[in-house]
Length: 98
Length: 98
DNA sequence: ATAATTATTGGAGATTAGTTACAAAAAGGA
DNA sequence: TCCTTTTTGTAACTAATCTCCAATAATTAT
Image 1: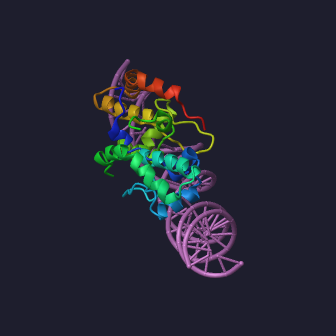
Image 2 (image 1 turned 60 degrees about the vertical axis):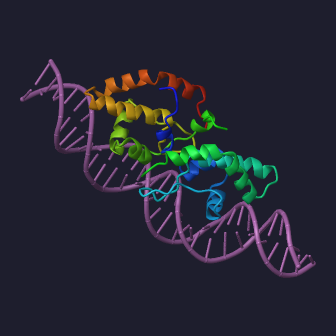
Image 3 (image 1 turned 135 degrees about the horizontal axis):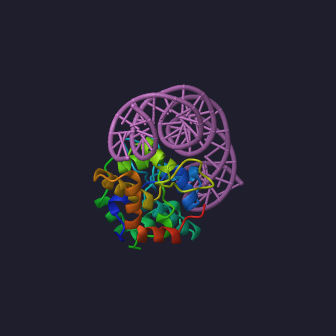
């Protein structure tokens, strides 16, 4: 009962407002990044409003650091993806089925 | 980069609608349980709407099983708390500060 | 310097999701 | 039956998010 239940974690996705607060990236910017394809929100059947899962929050935080370091948004996205590849696999395996 | 970041996880709380979907407990029932003090939503300064964190989702799922097993809501709540005590400690340590 | 590309931001108007509060209906036990 | 626990309904309201059209910065290229 100590380890994290990935089945549950995979289903826990936060709203864009919460994502903005957690990552300290404005809502407007998150939507822009999604428009451009740098980040993705979970596609759901039930919800019409966006949700961001643990992996994506992690990626956004990492992108933020890379941007402060001088990378372009695209480069930051690519580098973040590369660094989080193992985490992503875990999330792809146990992806939520709404 | 493989392990779960509890700082992040501690901040990822879902809406009541998502909690209902994830746990398969009706929204109305979740509110009733909260009214009675069997479960708690995170108190936030920013949000006026409820949020349930990983620990609470876990507790709700466990309560559901115990209820199906014939326990009363109160008993199920107590038993769930007991079983998840170590997980709760982790969440208390690294509680989110909104 | 001007033009083109990349990145960010604003706001109106509509929609969805969540809130409380009062109330009623089941279900279980003494 | 009576009392308590548990669950559910709904109305009226507030909060949060959505899309879409557009504008402004900032950076890079010619």
